[in-house]
Amino acid sequence: MIGFSQDLQESNIESQEGLETANRGKYELYDMIANTYMVPPFGSRGVTREYLLQVWKNEVFRVESITYKHFEVNLTKKQLKKVGITNNSMLVKKLNILLKETGRLELGFTEYDAPEQTWLFKVARFIDRSNLLEFFEETVIREPPLSPQSMAISQIHLGRQYAGEWLFRLEKARRNKKLWEAFKNISDTYRSLASFRINADVLKHELKHTNERISSLEMTLHDQVCKSAFYYTSYENPKVTPELAIAGGEEFTPEMRTQLSTNAKL
Image 1 (cartoon, rainbow, N blue to C red):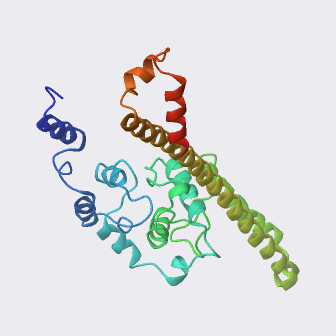
Image 2 (cartoon, helix red, strand yellow):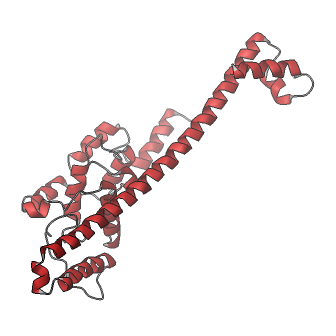
Image 3 (cartoon, rainbow, N blue to C red):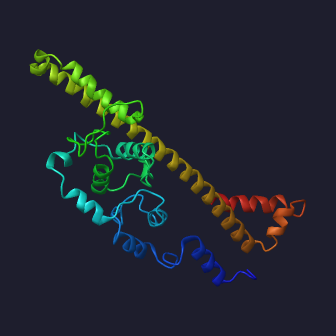
């Protein structure tokens, strides 16, 4: 295009990204960022160039690798032990809610593109130190007592704790193994139900995306067939031209239409 040089294109990219990243490919960009920040593996789902740029610009959650290492070294086994089977999509969704409610930047991932599990568990432990999401066996720090200023997510967590203390306030109840197992089964069943619900939501999202892709490919295929049929017909009959087809009229004869239609079906 006249007046639109490659220099202008490169200048526009640099103005959007900055000189540090504009000329770097995805692998180079990843390597540069991973030297400082703890990010999922290069091939992890959701680790796009856009995500990496957001990390670089401090537009999504990020933690320096050295900061996490200092945090992790003091953790006990119980503080790292997960409670039951964890659904990655659910964890991403809940972490984003927690980050948003506490005024922090979200992960940069959604429940529909959950990243690699090991990285996700590490940042979950770093973000949720008081175990509000109840994904770990023990807290790193205790959540402050309930108050009018408590966040909704904190109110739910502390409310569940108070409910448990009330139900087992009696010595007989605490010693009753059947009662304990009954409550544990309720908890496990609820976790399974919540997990299946979010799995269903993710599958619906993927199905919608797949159907949209199918529709797009069907349109592309139809366009390609029509174009190829037209080109082939024009070789057979040089009188069949794009201008003639667009103009229509008597000059575009029924025989030409039949010829074009036959070639398209073939």
